[in-house]
Image (tube, rainbow, N blue to C red; front, side, top):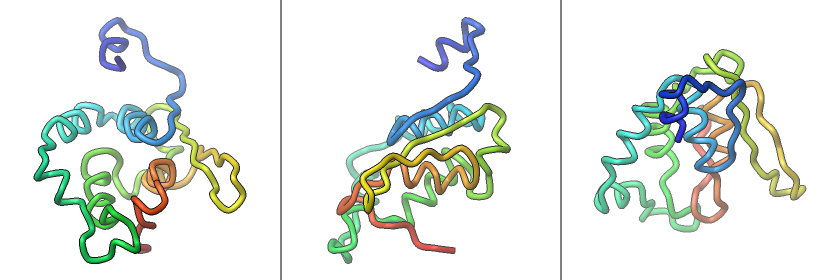
Length: 129
């Protein structure tokens, strides 16, 4: 849809999303929509299985290190700040301890997307550093 809008000359003033919408929105706002589309279309069952964390299922079903690295390669660079993106971007996550929404409009784009797409027990917290 974003590519179709761009083909018609329609460019949004701000891109916002949550969960997979944050992933796609960040890719679009950082100029990497084609890269994330190609990455997603290349997935196979084996490719998806390569993200499963068989050694630490109590920490989460998905291995955070490999997925986070893939996000940095295909969606937003690890060092890209939201405020430095070519288009304005925001994403939303749920602050689990308080049960309320948290809006990300500045700071690390990768951290914001990661927080937005996190699913407790499925996606473990990302390694720090």
